[in-house]
Amino acid sequence: ILLHISWFTECMAAGEPVKIEPRHLLEVQMHSDVAVSSLVATYGCLRRTPLTNRNHVFTDALETLAKEAAFCGSEGRSLAFIRAASVLRSLPSTLTTMEELSRMPGFGEHSKRVVQEILEDGSSAEVERVTQEERYQTMKLFTNIFGVGIKTANKWYQEGLRSIGDLRNSQKKLKLTKQQETGLQHYEDLTMPVSHTEADLIAKMVEEVAHRFLPGTIITLAGGFRRGKLSGHDVDILITHPQEGREEGLLSKVISQLQSQGLILYHSLKRNSYYDASSPGGKSTSSMDHFEGSFSIFKLKGLSQSRDNGARVHSTDSGRDWKAVRVDLVVTPISQYPFALLGWTGSKHFERELRRFSSHEKKMVLNSHALYDTVQQTFLAATSEEDIFMHLGLEYIPPSDRNA
Ligand code: DCT
Ligand code: MG
Image (cartoon, rainbow, N blue to C red; front, side, top):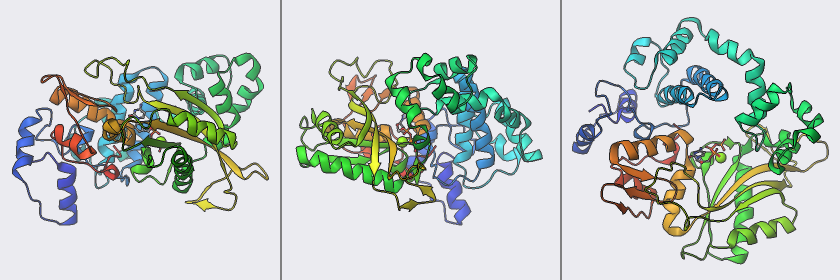
């Protein structure tokens, strides 16, 4: 009964009658991992998580600790904090007592302690300390650079580098990759939020060029924007065509055309590799391995006067009417499109939870290409995201509720 609890509690909060259907009861029996005494479903993909987060004060703290753990190479510890934050993110109201927390899944002692401290004192001393640490601040700064991961950031920190200025001054001896060099060059632009208006403009730009080469091409804005976010760190675009196979080779033409118009500051093309990929029944949990794609930086022009949600849409440099914007383009055959759409809509944690649910509860392997039933040893076809949720025996969660 308590399975679809975020929905259940929402109904209660809104004073709406709660109608329990037989399928809900059935699902309680199916998901052994769901504690019936718990107020919130264990898996993030069983919960509805809208954009509105009423527990920022707790989730910000837990996410800081998650980041810090990741910077120390403790992936498991990091994930524990992410899981706890995600549970609080899905709540329809602000947490007020530890008693409420005791009925929620996924809270280890450490996360509980942090929440308790915030409930009692308004903040967590540990989180305050971490955010003041030079190492944490530097790692956060460096890992925000396009192309820079934790290992590189840590190496630079150990070498005594502390700021973007330091990196720029030592650029020659750092032996940067082309990607890092561009990331550093456009650091200010790339850390400025991308607005929905800007994302739409880029999607239109790609669509217009794609249609020149291949009429009927379908362009979809995925990632955070599809979940309703008003801004993001990049623009995620899916490209497909109703006739399977027609999309092959399209991306390089689109990029070349945009490049000749001077609209690409950086790009790294990746050819598709789904024909030489290992079986989707294998162990890989990567959600975006085998598509033809491009990690790019676009030069978005002509926005000098516009403003959107408070975020300036052009660079702060004087006289510049363009802004560097990170864009990921992914080309998918139409038969894989629903899987790619589901995989690229996110959130990252929602995707992680969908894959965990698929393998632990259903013995199925889900990625951005396919859903494979390891018991039946068959691929399950889908023409929509709804089909995929149905194969998994899950209630459909719309993109706006996938902000886990
Ligand atoms: N994704 C995933 N696993 C990852 C990274 C990404 O499943 N390790 C999926 C989920 C979201 C999508 O790809 C796009 O990734 P991002 O752009 O990083 O996420 P976003 O939600 O779009 O965030 P932002 O709004 O900041 O761009
Ligand atoms: Mg994104």
